[in-house]
Length: 597
Image (tube, rainbow, N blue to C red):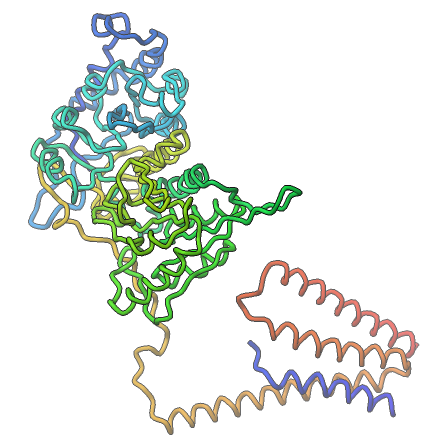
């Protein structure tokens, strides 16, 4: 009988704990260029002045000969003026065009110091395999370590100059906006490039007037999750953040990582990153990997967790104000916040060795984050890398594309071509963005594979198409993409209950919970009593007591862990604990059967 009492006592402890908690389209007038392209011969008079070897054009005859008859037939029936008409604005622009009827031209960048190319061979292969013809201007990828032969190896056609590439292409791709010599040649063509229409207003007007259809890569809706695959701003900012740390280390007179040797101790560099966007996060990761002590600041409180997850320290202004703005960018802060921020930054400037500034919104003047007071307190030999130099700079005295040194020995780097300094990687990522965007225009919404079709129901297309058929769409005729609001919780629309109603509802829940827990406790007690009456072994009773105490301890440990800390490792641990409990129960059952037997 004593054994039974011990079992009931151990079970009572376990059931008491359980009762404490509840169970928890498109107009392309230049299609005739494909017909002319099919007649090109590397040995003809068109190429007598070319310096390219004839084998670079070997893919032309193979591909064109397969589709020659079909191309002629489809182009003969295509009318570039065909569009849907009606009272309401057309959602589908132009007729659908099969990939096999389109030629994409890759132009060589003419901007001084630009080493990238808009389509790398890897990206060109995606387009060729999908059915497009791809023409590349000779030497377009040479500064990015991509030879002409690398393009022909994946099925592209290499032409000797920009004029022929433009003439034989329907869609042209570039990185930088076209210059004053290129722009007139793009009339009646389609251009995919970074345009910055708010800055290059004259260029934008010229392209629109001459009926150039323009997709501005820098107008990608960054809050659209699937548009991340086309977001050239993010892919290039990631590289800029990495390269900024490399440039800082190159100009910094000490190691980034601390060292202790027989010759002496070298402290680690202290790096401050201002602005925790894509570039800022890349800079934090790179600086941490190089052994520096990294701090970061951003007005958007949501970035704190990202910074700390990389092992950096997040600096906070002692004011409750969130700087998250539209489109994922930071917003303008109050004067009180700015004053507190200035004091924090002044203290940090005197302590850190390297500052990297990344605050830049495309099309706007960059805000000044490092003023003259901060520069004056920085130590000699300190380095600042200003990633916003192209738009005026985040640092006082920044000069675009120059490295200057202040009178107190602070180096300010204002390079605007940081992605271009890693041309091969930058071109590959940029080209992937462009290729994925081209392949999405049509199939994303129409679900018709292999057909290019502009559909204004596609948020990415609707935001990036800034000029079409001589009509300027930016900014008035573009509807900015806004993420859908979070789903409303059940009961949000219910009228607020009175205090008496809330009290009555709470009492009912408490009574229901008490009845449920009492039922569970009763069943557990009955099971324990049945176990006690059917066993005569002291060992079995001891095992049950141990099991009850282990269950109590395990319950408290698991329920005491915050949900955010649950991980796959904890899941495995719980599974092992569960199997141990099952094994203990089997041992109890085996002991009970042997005793009763």
